[in-house]
Length: 273
Ligand SMILES: Cc1cc2nc3c(=O)[nH]c(=O)nc-3n(C[C@H](O)[C@H](O)[C@H](O)COP(=O)(O)O)c2cc1C
Ligand code: SF4
Ligand code: SF4
Image (cartoon, rainbow, N blue to C red):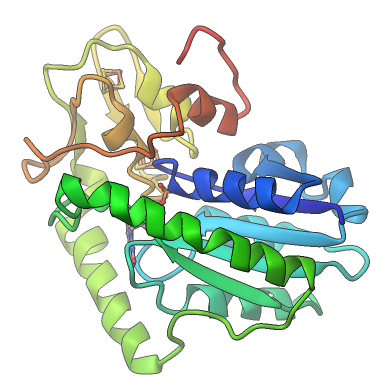
């Protein structure tokens, strides 16, 4: 069975899960969504795959905007088995139901939607990250789910989508997102402190090309998709959201590197580890 997984990650959790799933399934190609978007809406592999998966992190109980945009523009040929794998901190909300609804507008549907709890990367304005000593256990529990999900995909099973599709949950979540992104304004408050040495990594990994690094400054635009990659991957821990994230530990998945993040953008540099 030939499988494609379109993947998007900010701090590596989703890429690590996509890789584990690819290993369990065999014959699987992982295509970074940001690269597929650069190459055009219809990569040739999409025409021959038996199964197509979408792997992404949950942001505010939904898909990242960049993932929505990608799926919206994707043409699905033939009748592949479609599945979604969302990584989250434990509250996936209606993201997989929303993905299913989006696919239904294309005459397709999601046959399996798994939400896998991974370490939290929501560092600010409030810190939802668990104590560091819990990270290893969360990763181990998540890994245990992979064989069962791979079996269901291999058997092309129709499974109930994971998460919650309730309207009240959606309303509360939208209000929470509005408060944080619009009222508090996380994107406006992203900045580099004087620890920054202008290495340029943040600009090279930002999936939306939202960061510009010059000799004198680092500047953020307004096209942020809230992946928090710039905050967690900065080697100097110089990226902050206002004053709220100062001193908080940074996180990325232990099996994912800056080089993987740069490759996600389609710009490889072997000197980065
Ligand atoms: C802006 C933002 C919003 C988030 N919202 C949620 C959420 O609503 N529910 C949840 O369980 N986790 C939430 N998270 C946590 C991430 O979904 C989780 O850590 C995910 O595994 C990160 O994946 P990545 O490492 O592939 O980027 C959020 C993280 C960020 C940065
Ligand atoms: S990654 Fe950090 S140190 Fe490097 S340019 Fe960006 S903010 Fe500065
Ligand atoms: S600016 Fe930072 S948080 Fe926003 S999309 Fe780019 S890397 Fe992600």
